[in-house]
Image (cartoon, rainbow, N blue to C red; front, side, top):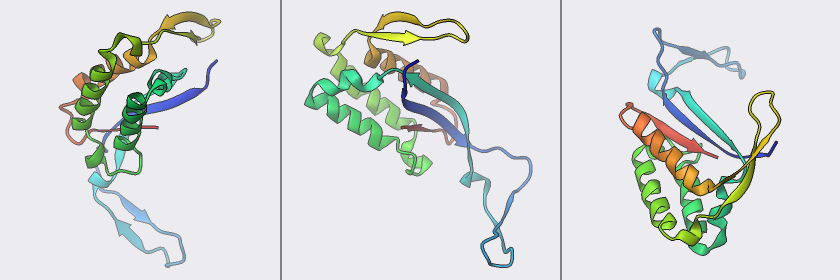
Length: 152
């Protein structure tokens, strides 16, 4: 099985029926600190791709720029409001512009194992598949209040 080269996750503000309290145990006599529900986010979708989705972007300077933009726009340490679904549209536009050129759509051999079966080998265009996956994500989650994305 291949290594996982990246993981994409969709988050939303956590939904709790009760307020939460955090009890700190760092020498402050158990001081209680409350926080608002909006400060916690829960993962609602995760996709870890096996194989190198980024390989097709490494062939030229423009591809590297697209890859760096994706990585910087969806870093885990950004506030959720700074990695919202509006940025997915911008990334889709960049990828579409990049993929218009046929020579950018490189075929690669991937191996995929399904559950307990032995791995199957197939041909794919990883960056085109990534584009379609992002398009699907956008269509599914674009209207979800407070939704955000991380890619690592």
